[in-house]
Length: 369
Image (cartoon, rainbow, N blue to C red; front, side):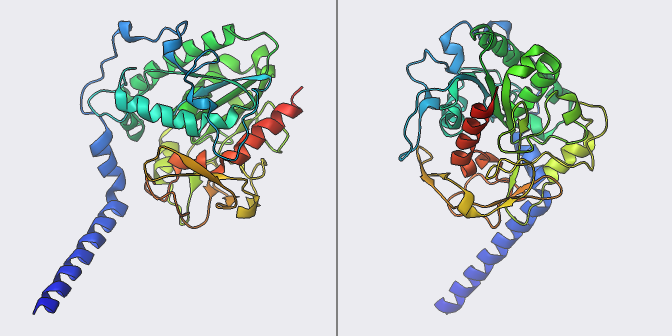
């Protein structure tokens, strides 16, 4: 009797898990929108909350900051003096609250996540040059799940204005002949794309850009690139070009990216729908192509508490497919937390290829003239 009851319980649990899995696979986009998209009207944050980029407190990383998470390197990597470039890194979304459309600078949870991303992402560039990373009143995560909503557009415009002001402060602090590396992830890459289009393309400043690492945001090869002033990086030593990828395990289902492409027009004018995304393979530094896991110099594998990571080589392969997705094979061990619907490893775009990205920036800087 007890054995039969146990079997009934096990069967019920299996049905429940299957039901949850099927519901998630069918309605994950709706569930995410319901959970993350703010229901409130759009209200901009007060002018008094605007960051003053003349003050160190408005930066998460700056050469004069004593406590700078971007100077971290994992065990086994020797800290090197900062190279001759200046790096402007814009953080991904760390504000997840659905009660407002833009995050204040003093949100504790968002700042904790910001420090983690600065440590695990921007640190890849600390050998290329001194890193400047602004705090900004970013759009909340839900804004990206409702791209056509006028409230989302306002929230992103509001965040971009902070990033543009920070960029002006960054430029003012650099000698006029210093090479520049632009880097971001997710929302950070979104804002840098607009910055390239509006502030860099067609200006003398474009000649100073070693490379723009616009990772974790889809860039249409035909609808976006022609208007950005920089081409995609074709080879591992190319400079004045753009590096980008979107990481997916297989089978990949990029329905959120497809929905964004279908609903928007590119910076060059045409619809993004049906076009391929820029994919520069992080293991080879070339546009497209395939590389085995043995070419991976080291992935940052986080510990259970996400407070540290170890650098482990040869863990993850990379292949650019015809759509421009970066496919990493079967879901890799050690990265199961925070995987987005569709086997999307967006959160780990940097971590999966940290050592290769570090080498890529060094190689392109060495080739820069």
